[in-house]
Length: 239
Image (cartoon, rainbow, N blue to C red; front, top):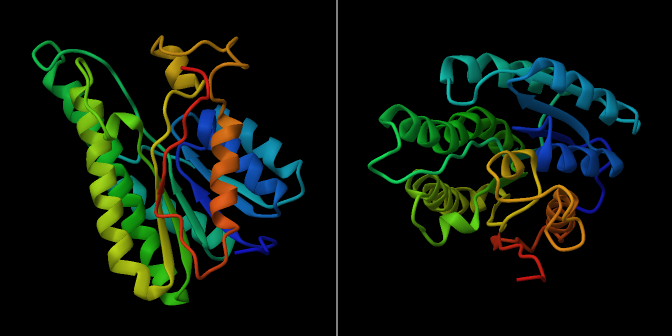
């Protein structure tokens, strides 16, 4: 995909952090963007920033972990955009705690959001891409999905599952000219990582920034259609 003008993208968790950086990067390439999230006020602010770059932008406020909410919202976004070419499954939550200490409801919600949420959104978007016989799906996992650590059992389990689901989907839809890419970034200075205390907003020169992540996605999309970035791990140059 070398000509992005007029392409349509949906980015879940697109109002801030990695999702917002990706939405703005897409807009600069001429891609119309729909973003999702749970905070309508923040979504509206981000949509205004996207529109200022000269593309169509819209949003839907819903929780990806709720399939009954996902179905009408995704349909509405695709109708508003008048199509869909690119899906970025970025929405996710995290919390740390030992397997014994983390409440069952919290452990379950991480799986429900990070795994089932990705599945629900993809299930609603995929038929449109298959009908076009072309499309792009970018699924955001994490280095936590490559290696488990103490206190990350729920988050790592969810991100391991994202990789498995994504790789299976890639093999299912290659015949439909749909490229599926799985990204496994290390710590990026996002709102979530700052809230969790694992990143510092003042670490611009030493820690990955959301814009670095967005640049990788755009570079992958720019590959000729004969080539597909199956997976990519993004790391900081500073240990």
